Amino acid sequence: MRSLRVLLVEDNPDRAELAGRALLREAHVNEVVRVESGQDCLERLANDCKFDLILLDYSLPGIDGLLTLGEINKNGYDMPVIMVTGHGNEEVAAEAIKIGAYDYVVKSGNYLAALPAVVMKTLENHRIKKEHAQLRENIEQNYLDTLEVLISVIEAKDSYTRGHSEGVSKYAFAIAKEMKLSSGEMERIRAAGLLHDIGKIAIDKQILLKNGPLTDEERKVVQTHCECGVKILKPATFLGEILPIVHQHHERFDGKGYPQGLKGDEIDQGARILAVADSFEAMTSARSYRSAMPFEEAVDEIRRHAGGQLDPEVVEAFLTAVKKIK
Ligand SMILES: [Fe+2]
Image (tube, protein in one colour):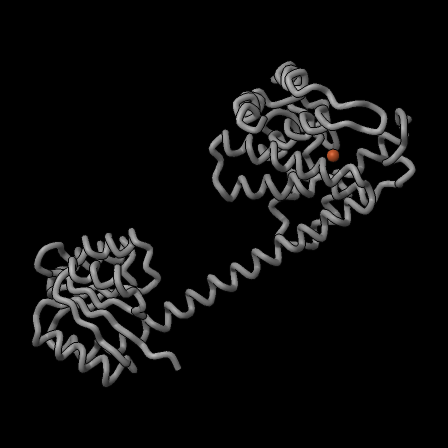
């Protein structure tokens, strides 16, 4: 087992001695390094940050424990801090927890007897927290791998779609960023951009790849790709958040879109963003039956549809975002 190291920040030598002994004896700690002030603590960490835990006294010479904790946080050291406060200093303890201390110990009668248990509990909680973070990272990686698989499935059916989906995703993300949406929302929109046309897998290849105009009947078949996309993605619960975008990406701001004919704010904001990105990407990409529209002309075309087919607020963000992409 790896040896456990604790950094003890305590200016009182007797108390430090007793606390150190208690930790070595009862908390399975192998090494206790003691420093006498917040400043010394920060200097020590700058040279040696391989500690498993910091036991930080609040009242110290120079900068106090709270300020020291703030500096530790700023430097992003990955180790839990337990604040040790004087009796009757509960506000300090509460503040310490607020700014990131794992726990606190109040220096009352026999606090040294309780200290090893608090240290062990904190070390265990920190270990579990790290394990969870690792697990979450693995889940996120699995999610990205799954997206990759789904995208290659679309590509196998319709070779033009891959480049298109990546382009839509890129433009939609840039618009979302310009609109200052949350990072979670931006990621939702990015993923939906990649998968919005997945329902095309279910569409007859003869119709999907037809060279020339579609009949009314064929158009209706193609239009089912929004609902097909939802059916395909629904079993993957972690993709649940992007379903409204997949379902609504052909809705129009003026209510003349499909499949539901939703209007304005009834349409998911992500879908309104995707509609702009989708139109722009389609116009600026060459197809087998037509060449690509010049960039500036396509921008004008998007501007022209603001308030009609497209959400004017989204178009405005697009017009700024597109200058940065070009
Ligand atoms: Fe589509």
